[in-house]
Amino acid sequence: KAGVTQTPRYLIKTRGQQVTLSCSPISGHRSVSWYQQTPGQGLQFLFEYFSETQRNKGNFPGRFSGRQFSNSRSEMNVSTLELGDSALYLCASSLERGGYEQYFGPGTRLTVT
Amino acid sequence: KQEVTQIPAALSVPEGENLVLNCSFTDSAIYNLQWFRQDPGKGLTSLLLIQSSQREQTSGRLNASLDKSSGRSTLYIAASQPGDSATYLCAVIGVGSNDYKLSFGAGTTVTVRA
Image 1: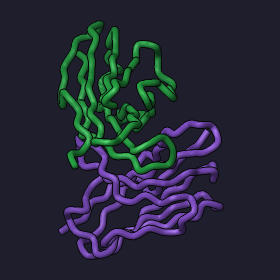
Image 2: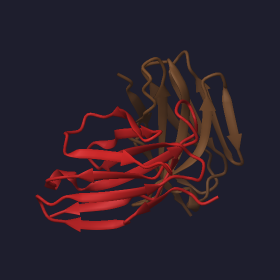
Image 3: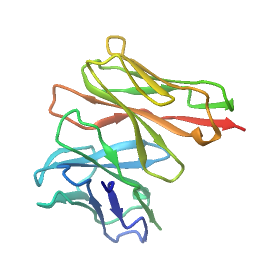
Image 4: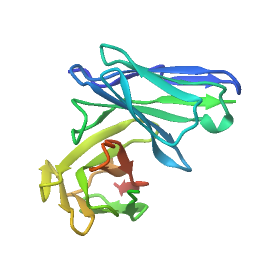
């Protein structure tokens, strides 16, 4: 089975711009979560999607949003980019909600200048 | 709020030595605990998943134990190799709040010297 894929892998944007990141979960997986990883804050939960609905959201401003499509693929969007949004954005998928093993993609490295 | 701590933050050992990585969590009401490996600039690779009802899980040279009541897990890597050099992260999913997010520790960076 193919793993979790994320596109693009690298992105450079300017402050004030917006960006969309994409995540394709493992085939058959219905739950997709997003995490932000920075050297200072470590791994922080952004949001979780299941059945095209956001089920949980972390402590991030409203500039961070996402959605999930009927095929379980997910996108996250960051509007009005700030320098502090520079990070590795990781997507994880699991079979269902709950205590299932989570599998991570390679991440998208976002640099905001 | 679940707090996950990993000690030590960094570890350097000669090849062949066994590795012992520690993880502690403050809230023992968990669904499971998962150990990951992360190479620099890369995503996370799942190593082992221990369900809350299990005491340990093994995969090859890796063995992870879980003591839910004391809020501790230990990852053992036998006969370390230079290829084991990476950052190891533990994460837990809590129960009770319908909140299935992973709460991560800061990780232990391991260097295995040839």
